[in-house]
Image (cartoon, rainbow, N blue to C red; front, side):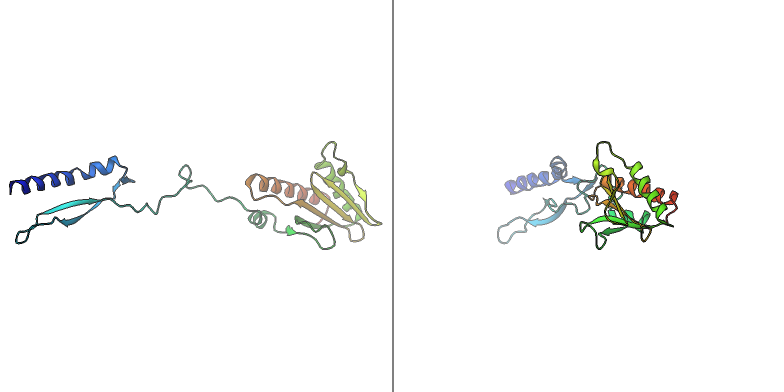
Length: 201
C-alpha cells in the first residue's frame, strides 16, 4: 500500500504541473488554455478499488480562426480589380476589342464628336498629352480616305471622319493595384480631353 500511495502522489504531482508544461510548449493560444482533462483509470488488482487521477491531453487541432499572412493588417481592403474600377468610375469603357480592328483585348471606348474637326481636335489633344519623346508612333497617320490613326505610350486612337467618331484603345493592365491605378489615370485623361474637345462623354 505504501508503494501505491507513492505512485498516486507522483501522478498527482505530474497532473498539477501540466498547465505549466503546456505554457512552455506553446499550448496556450490567444490567452485561453486549450488543455482539457479526462479521467483515466489506472490498472488495479482484482478486488481492489482503482485510484482515480487526472491525465493532461493537449488539444492538437490548430485554431481555425487564425488568419495566416495578414496579421500585420487584418482589416486591409481587398485589392482593386479592373472590372470593379471600370464599373465604379468608367462604366462606358469596355474590355475586349472592337470588331473590324485589332483583335487583341484592350480597354476601349468610342467618342462621338459634333463634326470631323472636333474629332481631329481630340486626336491631336491625346497626342499632345500622351506624347513620349523618341517614339515614332506618336505621329498621326492617314490609314485610308477618312481614317486617321495615332499610337502614343501604348494608347491607340483612330478617327473615323465619316462618322465623326474617335475610337480609343488603352492597353489591358495586369491585375495589380499599380497598373489598374495607371489605367484609371489614363482613362480620366482621355475623358477630360474629349469633354474639352466637344465630344460626347
